[in-house]
Amino acid sequence: MSANESTHPDPSVVPHDPVETDNLSGGIEAIKPEEKPALAKLPKDVTHTISKTDEIIVRISKLIKTTAGLGAALSTLNYSIYLAAYLHAKAPTRAAVITYISRLIGRTPSKIPPGALAPANPTSFLTPLGSLISDTRTTLRLTGLIPLYIWLKTLLSRKSAAEMDPALRRVALIQCTAYMGFQALENIYHLVVKGVLPADIVAKRGGINKWVAWSCRAWLVGVAADFLRLLREAQLDKSKRAAKSTQEREDSDRKWWNEFMVAAYWIPVAIHYSNYPEGIRYMNTGLVGFFGLMAGLNNFRTQWAATA
Image (cartoon, rainbow, N blue to C red; front, side):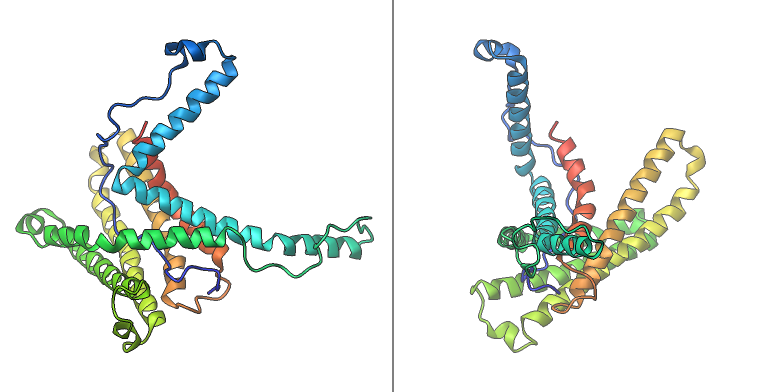
């Protein structure tokens, strides 16, 4: 595992509630140039740019006022930075390779770019920013056990026992328990790192690396359980497809495949962090950033659409 990665793997594990209705914006709408005499006098391109910029800012404000929206935004930003930091750090190496190949084929540039043949810098100025956002997300997840407790309580209720498919309920119980294990372990070692709890709590029980690894193994169980859930949902859907319209079937298939791909993207990241701090071979910060970004984009799109 790269030393550039954050101490906290920061996987997105706690399932967010459905899109939250945002009533906190106070009815604020984006600027409409035609309703502002001062803006109406400006060139059309300028007013259009101002209007679009204002609209984006208003939507970002709505997005980060909801728990799910803030989580989706920070996750997308976090993994985007991981990917960008890796590519930025590797850029000198790429330049050196291109220059070396050019020399081999007799097409060496008359002026070699400064530093092109220098060893690659393993870090990027983006790395500290990625670590900061990762740390912020880990801190925000300190309350993650609360919604997980409510989820567990719901699953154990008589209503769920009577209404849910037995197999889906068992999978959900496994998944919820695994996520609670992850969250509890992460909360403890994060508070130890921040000096809130005594260091001996972790030091006498394997050390920080062991706690990170075991918390991510619990996360891995939760992610893997998603495949069992999707398999069972596909089996149940077969008997209902005949009664659905073409549009309903297409929507159902699209939703199923989106959720399958999200789980598929998270699996390599979960396996990688389950072997913390070494990780798995060939898995670097760039791949972690790519898989995390692809997994989180679907949730971000949903939350962003809700701000329109």
